[in-house]
Image (cartoon, rainbow, N blue to C red; front, side, top):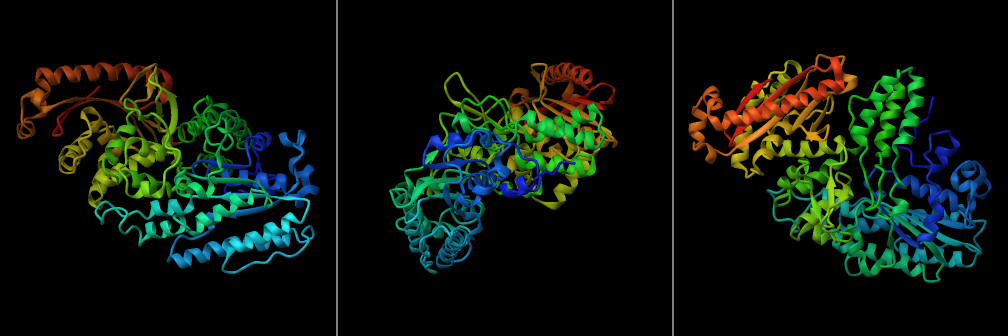
Length: 606
């Protein structure tokens, strides 16, 4: 059986205890050539800490005797660079520093973390150091300078690794006040913004730390530094404090530095399939699930291959090997905090309509360029335009680059169904926050799931969902609004591959619910929905008049009848395609739906 390193970011443990390792060590030589102060950004849980651990084990002079064991059969082991095992390694992890409490408490935590790592450094290299390092309990910068002085007296130089450099900025985002609270920036999360400013602005402690790192690279003993994070929020605030850093994140040589290729995933899945005695068809179905829910990331303008989220992939494979069944919950709970980042965007002025538009493949977000440096002041107080929101969603990993348009703009899309779920949940929670409404929704959607009965859901949308749209300014745009209503209510990744506008032979159905392959053992039904929208002004009726008219009479009106006929024709074509793909196992219910304003739904079951 394979040992999957789910949740393990220690390269030494992975290599010495026989865990699966996807080799990216050929990039070490490219990192050396790229520069001395480097920054690498990727969404959380994407393998950044493991990469830092890989660098640590490769360059650490204390690990020289274990080079063959750790790297001998890897790409870099077959062609090592002269710098291997030639550095002292110092590693900081800012995710371990709490951003809670007052400024003095946070400052003390920063000093304590850096000092603890310096103390560990002194213990690790005590035999190579000419004299001891002095640790100043309340002044980590002085401790760092003492470390550098000790390093300069040796034949070695320092390689500094910094993980989660933007942890404080993410803490600020997560503690953002809800829309009903006082304006953003005045009192956020108990003063998070003020604490952040005190740490990074002027002569704030974190800015001073990075100024010390910059200065250490000027002949003071530091030769190289590699920093990871999620978003470039802090880079702007550091500005002069650390303006020597080069960003590798979008360069072609590093687009797949973290993440898995499909061929790598398929090879691991094939071995799991043998362990579980899965048939070729079952293995193919498992790969389809993996691809649909975890693949789809593109980091870089010229990247061609798509990348799988490594943490989610390992979660899936480990569960599949242990239980010989795919995990019921495809969104690993360890990624649940990403919901807060979607909530931040949704809470911005015009944020919810932007999220809804992103869910529609007909309206992919396009911007001239990614925002590559912005400060927390921008995040908290400045007007948020589309470039800001799209850039932030990209860095968070819930949008990805799709292509460059004919106008030279960057077009983005949702990478996979795990990310799509986060959008759908956020819109649903904002529109239907009450428990009673959610219970009613569950009853209505289960009528579709188990019986192919659309009537309870249409009744709910007419009487409750459309009323919310009317009262809360969520009228995004005609047919899109109607599709969003059904998508936010019907989306369920536990049982379905739920998609909006799935490609069917180069044409598009508005929405499909296809039962997950591993869930076909239950009495779940498949569904295909095709939508049309008619404004009330085109009908010449008021909302009250439409509500007072029977569905049969509305359906007989020429304009409605024509829309129903068009939706029926398209739905029939898409149904034939789905039946050809899935065959007899498909339990498909097909619906043509026409929305009359945001007041009535007229529908037909094919």
